[in-house]
Amino acid sequence: MRLLEVQDLRVSFSTDDGIVEAVRGVSFDLDRSHTLGIVGESGSGKSVCTQTIVGLTRGATVTGNAFFDGVDLLTAQPDELRGIRGKRIGMIFQDPLSSLHPLYRIGWQIREMIQAHDSSMTRQQARTRAAELLGLVGIPHPEERLDDYPHQFSGGMRQRVMIAMAMALNPDLLVADEPTTALDVTVQAQVLAVMTRLQREFGTAIVLITHDLGVVAEVADDVVVMHAGVVMEHAPRRETFYHHHNPYTEGLFDSLPAVGAGRRRLTPIAGTPPSVIDLPPGCSFAPRCPYAFDRCWVSEPPLARVFGDVHHWSACWLPADLVARTAIRDRLRAETAAAGETAEGAAS
Image 1: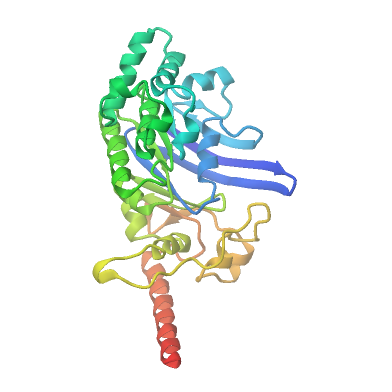
Image 2 (image 1 turned 30 degrees about the horizontal axis):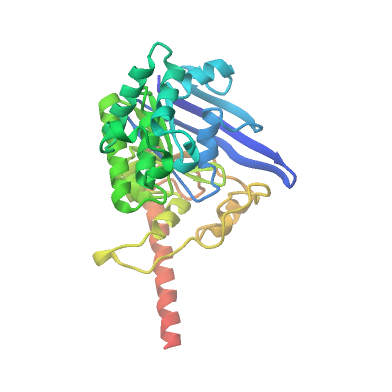
């Protein structure tokens, strides 16, 4: 049995403007000691998906299943869920300053969290454990820093504090929601190194939500690509980067800057993400897709195996055969390049 199995998860919210279908039939699973990267544009449903799993989307209409070590988190009683969340499932949120109470010392906040889940631990034992955790995530002079307030830490150090709190009870699963956003590259590397080291030491599974494909390339084992509340592609990291099938995944990679001999003009994804209140018929990416044809506008493609790989899934009507899919991609790129050269020639 997998540690986490999410099956056909659907999450919607009722608003004055209509029903927001934030997550529409998402499925994935995760083994112990593995990292799953979830990527996509803002508003694609990444955070809502994981927050729903741990019971943090109050007021939402939720269907589907989310089995954690055999327990369905979506139907668990509040007391049972509280016993799992924090103790067996740790959370790291995007903005650590809003997750830490500004009026309480860091040591008190970590100690409070530890004793809330382990009543047998004394106050001094919890404080000792808190200092140990701060040292583990690379904060110098941890004993002294326990008595500091959140505003006395830098952004990177506050994020390390959040990692320390999330890992305090050695959880089986760590959900990290854009933990490196707004951090400079040096601090980002340090935070990722801390998470990776803790995973090696404790065998923790990690769900990493990010829009940074560089971070995914460094730490993820498998990758889920989301768009407009659905999974567009799900594959091992290497397949996602070098043999992706879905045009949306291709668009994300084409939007990345290249260096060295591979430098080229950036090709951003045209248009804007669709409203999840008023989704277009057919494939949600069709209005922005350079490969779209008649079927794409009327029928939404299911997530299906591609390239003959049992671990590679894509929601697209393009051929599932690697040779045929590559031929279409190469032809379209050649036509685009030729059109660009013609336009430059006319301009000169």
